Image 1 (cartoon, rainbow, N blue to C red):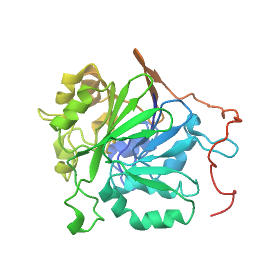
Image 2: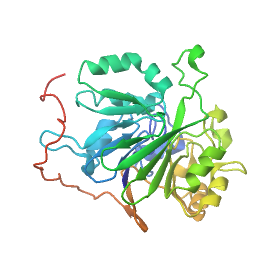
Image 3: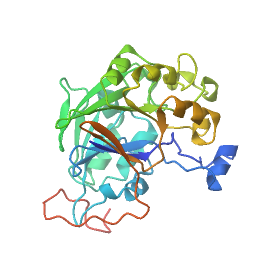
Image 4: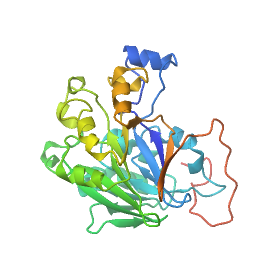
Length: 317
């Protein structure tokens, strides 16, 4: 199983376009690494890739990941797995609109919230939409089996109040059928539940919500579990040292954005990672390997294997 962290920032990315805080200014000056809105990609065979959320910057993020570049008339992207209906996780669907045959998985409330968007996208290219909470999970092209697990979480602000009492946030468990390796993808976590603990305990790697380092950073503490503190995720992750643990979805208030910060030193000492955008790692049988993106990737050679068309004719809308 290979995983690419396409984006590791919170909504709006880092630096935020309308923020002049010390960290955002440092990122604009090149003193701190910039980060796009959170999303990732996963594959079991290095040919069929699945996006985990789709950020507004998905075009740029895919362009920076050579493994996901299209061939002459095909794309290795097979579809999308959505964890929720937040704008920074679904806005990229519009960018993918001209790729026919993509399959998108989401929880029923998310599918309902996207009803109008699904209709609009369907006028560009036929897509398939599926319930990610279907009993027994589902198998993805490339040899991955996935189960989705509802976790506590709030609805997006744009959702009517009458619809906010549903399961809006899910965590994905992705297993490689060949190697048996397991990835838990949980970029939005409001509380550490027994279910999440069990999922992490049986995983080889976890990508976890690291939005805020401390509770006081958030105007809405109930939305994201902080990293630090006696009930924070870092203390809980200490029980799972056998698992590769990676924080994502970092807000611009988070000191983890600065590699020289005391917060980063604390997390690193605990064996938990904060990786840059574009970082790639693999979960193989008997080993976990980190593969950094090459400085100047080259376009992969065309293949004679028939693939799904990447897009409508160039210049069309």
